[in-house]
Each structure stands twice: as structure tokens, then as C-alpha cells.
Image 1 (cartoon, helix red, strand yellow):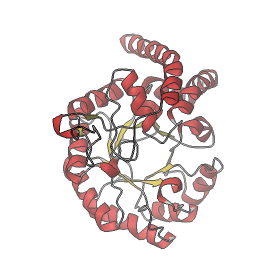
Image 2 (cartoon, rainbow, N blue to C red; image 1 turned 30 degrees about the vertical axis):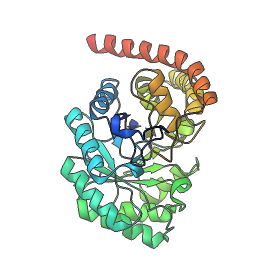
Image 3 (cartoon, rainbow, N blue to C red; image 1 turned 90 degrees about the vertical axis):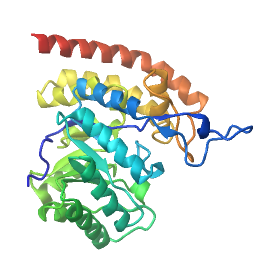
Length: 326
């Protein structure tokens, strides 16, 4: 099996999970959210997926931290994955998160992702328990073998409490257990080290929008992007400019996206990106507890940066349509 069929690089979107309110979603009188939260809005999710694909996004990453997977039931995760797969129709791969507090739970989610039609898995070390490097290796091996799907390893110490060493990444790749890495460790010197250890076949994706351009310049293949929820065409074109060696366009797009990156991480992800999507009229800004809606300062900051970003996004969409028509 090819380590990561259908995926080369570019901008992949870490997709939000939209929610909707209903009568049962709110407690009477005090108007506080129900503990299990508002319902998943699958029709809106389908529209978000189609918007991403039309803008040239290289892949959809669902049920990750941006998708509030920790608040979703296994049945909801299955529905989210199946909806993305149905909309994608093989045009782009759907990569499904399978994060759980222990390996047995991650294996169960991996099985469900495969049944729902996911092309690949996004696998991080279990949070809170802080496994050793050997434990991380065994965890990923169990998930990979159980689902028999390509795996994108996710190194995000800020959320899991455990960093994955370069040696463990290379070992997992050499043993055929992973084909890609989403790297949110924050070390821009890492891609050359990993390339030296693992060889050229491992696809290295930044997990941090703010340094995605720099990561690409250091040898990365692309970015699993939060910002692409808002400006998918601009994020797609950033990586296309790098691949085409158009450094002038690459620098222009990097600088254009930078204020948006900063605003989208003014509070814990995905709080700001949900607020931005609401301001654009693309989905409700609802989140599930313990996440709460963006504060007024964040909303005001987003309002200032969304106008220029949206105008540039529409211009890029027109440019792409003209290029296809030509």
C-alpha cells in the first residue's frame, strides 16, 4: 500500500464542526448550553466541505482539535466523516482524527473512520497520560494495524503534553506505520533533520499557520491549516506559488495572510475561527463547553482583518476560474 495515496502536499484544511441550536439545546430560564452541547449541523458541514474543494484545498482533515473532536460522540464523528466523504467523492482525501485518552479508544475510532470511508487517519499521542517514546510508537502501531489506513502522525505537545522525538517519527516511517507528519512542535529547524533521518518519502506538514510559509521554505510539503477555513483559495495559492517558484507571489500571499493568522489564534482554537465563519455568514459560531464564544475584542479584531482577506480571496477565486476557462 502506498504510504499516502492521493496526497502530495499543499494546503489541507483542519475543518471546523458546525453546530446548530434547537429547543433541547438550551436549559430553560438560565439559558445555559446543555452539557452535551448543540447538535452537529451536517448540511452546513457539507456546504463547508464543497467550498473548500472548489477553492482547491488538497485535503479535508475532520474530527481534529479544530473540529472539536473531544466533544463529539463516536456516532457524531462517524456522521461528520461520512458527510465529508460523501461530498468529496474522491476529489480530495478525507483524513479523520482518532484521538482518545487511551489506545483502545483510538483503535475503535479508527475502525469507525474506515467504515465511514476515510482515506487516512490523523493520529496523535493520547493526551494527559504522557506516554514514553516507546508507548507512542506502540500506540500508533496499534492504530495503523487496526484500521489498515495511511496515518498522518500529529505532534502537538501543547495539547497532548508529550513531544514526539525525531527518532520516533523516523522509526514509525521506516516501519511503514506513517506516511506524513502534522508538525505543531514549533521547531522550524526540524524538517531538514527529519528528512536526513527518514528520507525523502515522509510528507511534512506544518500544523501552525503563522509559520507555514517558513516551514515550507525549510522543506515542508504544506500545511494543515485553520486559516483555510476562512481563505481556502489564498492558502492554496500560497503553496502553489512555492511549488511554481514564484517567490514574489509567495511573499505577497504570506504577508497578506499574516494578520488573519494572528487574529484566528487570539483565543484558543477553534473559538476565533468559528467567530470568523459566523461573521462571514458561513456557519453559526456555536461551540461546545468548555469552549465558549469569542470575546468582543477578538470579534472586533476579526472584523478588521476579514474585509481585506475576503476581497483578496474573491479575487483569487476569480483568477482561478479564468485560468480554468482559458
